Every structure is written in structure tokens, then in C-alpha cells.
Amino acid sequence: MARKVKIPNHIKKRYERVESMRLEEVRPKRKFYLIVCEGEKTEPNYFKSMKDDLPKGVLDVYDFKIIGTGHSTVSLINKALTIRKKWQDEFNRTIDKLWVVFDRDSFPDESFNAAIQTCMAKKNKVNCAWTNEAFELWYLLHFHYYNTGINRKQYQDLIEDNFKRKGLSDFVYEKNSTEMYSLLETYASREFAIINATNLEAIYEGQHNYSSQNPCTMVHKLVAELFSLK
Image (cartoon, rainbow, N blue to C red; front, side, top):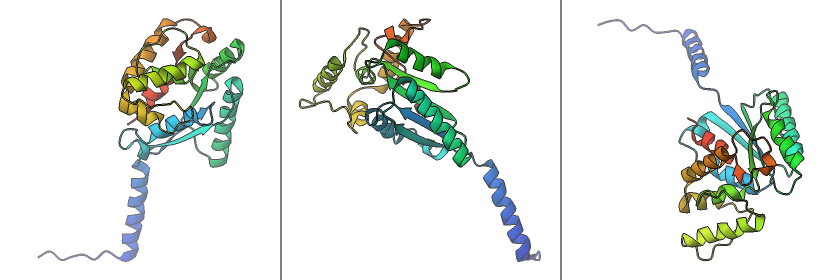
């Protein structure tokens, strides 16, 4: 019978420390998503609900911070850049992806266009999920393809009508609802919304006057990206 060799405790502990360090080195580092929204509740509530529904294991690899600022157009972009720099400086941690989410609403054409152009500047490295005219267009695209301009009152009426057609006879749209994501997932189709938004985007390909692109949204790019994370 082979004689058992007893390893001294100080050597065993040294081995355990080396092994622990080795495992730490191969463990994937968590990546950081920062999503900065114009609205203080509507968009953040939607994306916070979505975060909890991402594919299994994603939250083990990615950190998500979703912020509603109350800022709009160019001031929103500047705020997002400030937050990113502050966090990177204070916590010595890279923000791997910065997304901003904002609407056309009633802002001047030049302000809306300037915000998008600021995002597109390579030096800023900002991803832009803009909508013309309002974020609610993204909700509507879960039900139907809309390619004609819609005003803010029509958004609410159409959202309510679509849910009522799905059997929610007493549905009343609440702008800051925390349930919109789950309602859309239950009664409509996110995949259909992505297809519809992609088709809308194609209509305006090559055009750079974004304020005239109504209806149009880039929210599908952020949503599709989040659900493609592994």
C-alpha cells in the first residue's frame, strides 16, 4: 500500500491562495450597462421590468443601471456623459455601454436633430434610442405596424383600444405605469415590435433630418441588444 504523504499546512494554504487567484483570473468580469432616460418614470419603469426578464445568467455577467433624469435632447446627452465620467472616475470602473433614451415630443427640430448628432459623434461613444414622436410608439408597434404620423392623444387612445381588443375591457393607459412591460409581454409581441420598428427605420434610410421622421423609433435596437446578451 502506497504511503500517504501529509502536506504541511503552510504549503497547503499557499496552494489554496494560488488556486483561488487562478480561478479569479478566469472568472468573467461583469460588464456595465448605463441606460439614461429622458423620462423619470415611463422609460425607466419599462427597462427595469425588462432587466428582470433577460435570458438566464445575463445578470450574473452584466450590471445594469437605469436612470430617469428629467433632462431632454442635448441636455440629456450631456447629463449622460457627465454621469459616465463621474462614475468611471470615482469607482475606477469602465462603463461598457452607454445608451440614452429620449423622444421628439414638442422640442424644436434643431434640438432633436442636434441630440442625435451628438450621440453619433464617434468621440462620445453614445448609443441612441430615440423616438419620434413619443416612447409610446414602441408600445403600439407590439400590436400593429404604424407608418403615419400620430399625435400624443392618439397614442393613448390607440394603446387603450389595442388592449381592449385583447380582452382588457377596462384598460386605461397610465403613462408612468410599472406594468407596461409585463402587459405587453402577455398580450402582444416584442418580436413583432422589433420587426415593425426595423421596417419603419428602413423607410428613412439615408435621411438625416430626424425630426421629420414621424413615426420612427430606435428603441428596438436597445431591446434587441439586451435580449441578445449571453
